[in-house]
Length: 165
Image 1 (cartoon, rainbow, N blue to C red):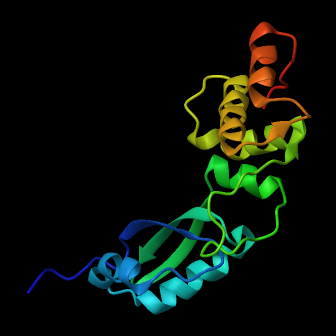
Image 2: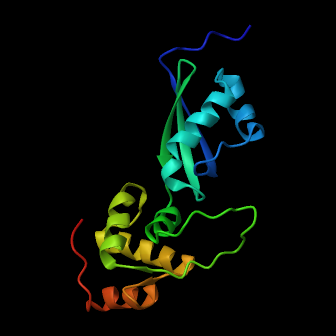
């Protein structure tokens, strides 16, 4: 018999799923089964917690203590940029390779950079902002009507002043 699990111990399971949808049992069962957590209940909790990110891929961290799972959503930069574009939720089974051609304001970029400051390796807030601008470029949107690369160049040259966090 394996030793009895410590009821105060917290284990973390990280899963990437589509917001607002229940992840498949084949994804959850191998990770949650050995911990004694019912995958169906955890899947419903994940779907409820990710409702704000409907149709977007989002990372979810399950904290499991005493066979109870609590859900924490860890959105990525691209998820937050696409959400800030306020596009209608898409059916990922029918629509593939979408171009996100919206326009974001610099204030929205600053807000996203503040939200993700905890996972950034940049020394300054300007570095955080440049990371988010790079993500905006890869997503395909513009910032204040111009390319995110142009905004990065302005920050580097000192033309654009980035506020402190």
